[in-house]
Image (cartoon, rainbow, N blue to C red; front, side, top):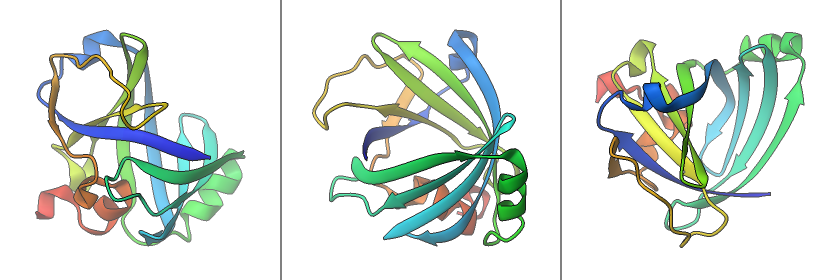
Length: 155
């Protein structure tokens, strides 16, 4: 149930040409507390509810539990979420043996593009594409729950 991932800023949009999947995502938070975030997400035509625990000291690992729910359930839960809905397009890009999830944000977070790569171990090596920029793993400002309350355009 642990998620191990690293986050990076993205330098340019060349990842789009390398993407094999693209989906629009809308998500809100029933709880955006760092100790326990509860997220509701619509990804394409599917709904999900996700609970995440607090990150470890490096920001790479935290408990994550996710369950698919119906689209109708997700829409009803989004209606009661905290203020600050996240709107983004996710591009999935295969680089070596890993898949990067690249999120291009809209609305109050327009201009922000973040890439995440999930790993099996915190110290696992991975190939870094040329469009990958500064690492922001562990910087809470780049967590979606934080961005829902303090959007990128307000920094």
